[in-house]
Image 1 (cartoon, rainbow, N blue to C red):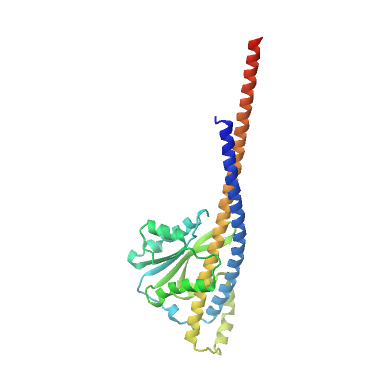
Image 2 (image 1 turned 90 degrees about the vertical axis):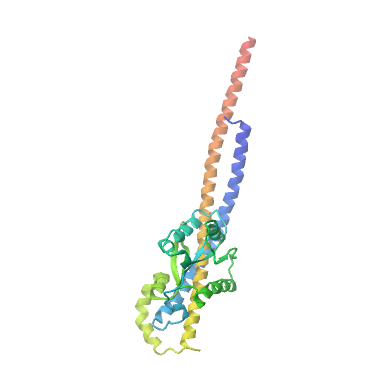
Length: 300
């Protein structure tokens, strides 16, 4: 059995570690709440934009709605820059690199853009070519920073370097649940709108006849094609920002749970070590009493 001093040192070390994990848990919980509010708010904004676009069905032709049959697929994957967030990054990476669409697409027909250090490291370690990597994206993402990143992604579409853009990112459900989703971002289509619109789809379908009748008298300035193209760009920017906010909310919720589990494990370890310490101390005292009794008997 370890000495009392060794057990004391272990208890002290685990206690210090517990303080760190508890502090990280509280910080992650606070940031999760911030990004949770922002992510849920962004869903409403994106839903309204998609609703407007869907109500103008039949009038949505632009460069971003072109149906292409030639060219590679462009995959954009979101992961965190840091670890200590449970299986979040592993689930996102597996969602893309173990998917049928990735494995059934020839290597020369795949383009990869990574957002976050973890996905970039995975791609590098597995010999994958990364077209662009955006690591260290600030948590307080400004519109300018978002537009700068999105425009670099859209350039692949504008230059006709790909036939489809697919995003892989987490969907934040609640503090305990998030899961990876894989959605088409370009080209715009009815299926693409339905996938992103989600709960707004029923409302859109209910209002569609009225919306179409109004569009018969709608005037566009400077012209319909330019307005539609600008609306498409605005929606892609909004979807990018929403995905980023969902990523941060999922990251901090996963980190909060991971740190909570670590704190609970530290508590259990402290309890076990304390019990071991008490047993060792009791055994030491019993042994000392026995030795004193033996010595006393020897002098009689």
